[in-house]
Amino acid sequence: MCGIVGCVADEPVAGILLEGLRRVEYRGYDSAGMATINDGSLKLRKGVGRVDEIEDEQGLSKLKGNIGMAHTRWATHGGVTNENAHPHASCKGLVAVIHNGIIENYVPLKKSLIAKGHRFRSETDTEVIAHLVEDEYKRTRDPTKATIAATKRLKGQYAIALMFQDRPDVIVGARKDAPLIVGVGEGKMFIASDVLAFIGHTDRTIFLDNFEVVEISRDRVKILGPGGKEVKRKPTQVAWELSDLSKSDFAHYTLKEINEQPKTVITASVQEPGKVEQFARAIRRAKSLYITASGTSYHAGLLMKFRLNKEASIRADTVVAGELKEHAGFLRKGSVVVAFSQSGETADVLEAVKGAKSKGAKVYSIVNAAGSTLARESDGVLLLNCGPEVGVAATKSFTAQVVVASMVVDAVLGKKRSNGIKELSEAVAEALKCDEQIRDLVHEYKDRPDFYFVARGYESPVALEGALKLKELSYIHAEGMPASELKHGTLALIEKGTPVVVLNPSGDAHADSLSSAEELKARGAEVIGISDIEDSVYTHFVRLPKVQAKFTPIVEAIPLQLLAYHMAVAKRNDPDYPRNLAKSVTVK
Ligand code: M6R
Image (tube, rainbow, N blue to C red; front, side, top):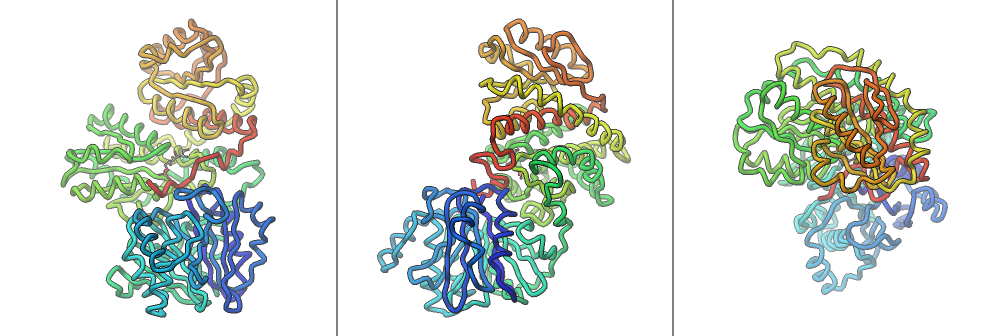
C-alpha cells in the first residue's frame, strides 16, 4: 500500500528521498512522486510506473532543497494517472500533502471546498486534505494548528505528511489507523510509513499513536496528543539493519528470503525470557480463544489451532481477520485473541483486534515489525525476529510464525522448552536442496492453467499456503484444500494431466492421503508427492527430510515456495513485486 517518506535535513534531500522511495517499493504501488521546497517555491514531480522509470522521465533526484517528501501510490480513489499520483498541492501551491489511507467523507468535503472556490486537479480523496489545510493555514499561520483543525474534519483512515511553501523548516505528520513513524537522524529528521524508508540513515525511531500530530524539523520532533498537549516520547532503536536489505547474490528478495529460512528457525526461537510462558498462561486461562490473521499469517494461525485443539484439548477457532466481527458474540471479558501478522499493520487485523478489545478481550500478537500498530496495541507480543521481509509473498515470516506458535503450544502443554530447533534448521537446509528438481517441475508444468494442492489434518493449511503462493507469484489458478474434500466437488475438475500436489508426510494421515493420490491418478491427475516416504502413485516425488510432526509444515512450505518463485520467473513475472498485490494491506 502507499509508502510515505519525508525528510528535513542540513543537505539536499532529493537523493535521500529517492533511496527511501526504492525502499518502500515493496509495499506495492502504481505511481510515485516527490515534492521539495527550494528558494521559497514548492516543486512537484510525479508519474505512473516504477520509481526508476519515473526518475528517468521526471528526474526526481534533480529536485533542489533541504526539505521534501515522496510517495508511492496504491490507487484506491481515482485511476492510475499522473494527476492522481501524490504529492497533491492546494490551489496556490501553498500546501502539499502525501497520504496513505482512505478519506471516507471526501465527497461532501470536496463539494464544500469547490463551493468556496477551491480548484481540484485530481480525482483522489487525498486532495481534499491539501485544500482543507490550506484554508486552516491561512487562518492560523501555524502548520501544526492548521493540520489539527483540518484532520478533525476527516473521516476514515490516514497517515499524512504535509509541507508548507513558506515554512521550509518543517514537515507535519498526522495519523489515524494507518502507520506513520519518525526517524531521528544526525542533522536529518524523517517521517515515513515504515522503518525501511530511512534505515540507511538512522535506526532511532519514534512510533506515533492514533490522533497524534507531529512536527519535525532538522533537529527537533514535537508530538501533540489528541488534546493538543505535547507528548514526550524517546526514540527506540530498531533491530533491523541496512545489510538486511541487500539481495546478496540472489536474483530476487523472494529467493533470498526463502534461502534464509535455516537461520529464520533459529532467530525466531530466541524469545525474551518469560514471554512465551506469559502467552501460554493467557491461552490456558482464556474463556474463549480466537486466532486471527490474513493471508499467509492466517495459514500459520490455522496450524496453531490444530495443535491447541488436538494436543492441548483447548478449543480455539482461527478466523480470517476481516470476518472476526461475525464472532463478536463470543468475545467478552476473559476472551483472548491471538493475532498473527508479519507487518503488524494489516488493516483487517487491526480492526479485528480493536473490535475484540472493545468487547473486553485481551490481545496477544505474533508480529515481525516491532513497534507496529498491532504490537503496540497488544497485551503481549512475541516477535518473529526474521528481519525485514521485502518480497511481497510471505515466506520466511510463515516459517517464523510456525516456530513461534509451536513454542507457545509447547508451553501450553507444559513443556519447559521447545526442542529440535537445531535439527529443524538442518532439515530446512536439506529441504532447500530440492531447488533443481522444482525447476524441472516448473519447466514441465508452467503452461498448465490449474494447480491443486491437497493434504490432510495438520498439513492442510500448508496446502492452502501452497495455492496462495502459486496464485500470487505465477498468476496460475490454484486451489488448496483438505484431501477429504476432493470427493465433494473438486474431482470433477481433474482431467488428464492436471497437476495435483499431495503433501503427505509419514504419520497418521499418510495412508488416507495415499488413497486420495490414487483416486486423483485414476482420473488422469499427475500427482506431485511431497513426503519423506516415496510411493509409486506419484508421477513426481519430492523427498523431504523427516522432522518432528509439529514442524512438517515448515519443511513442506519450502518446495511450495520454490515452485511459486520459479514459476514466476519462468513466466517472466517479477516475483518480488507481483501484480495487484501489496505487502502491507493498510486499507480495508
Ligand atoms: O503483514 P501480514 O502478515 O498481516 O499480512 C497478511 C497478508 O496480507 C499476507 O500474508 C499476504 O497474504 C501475503 N502476500 C502472502 O504471501
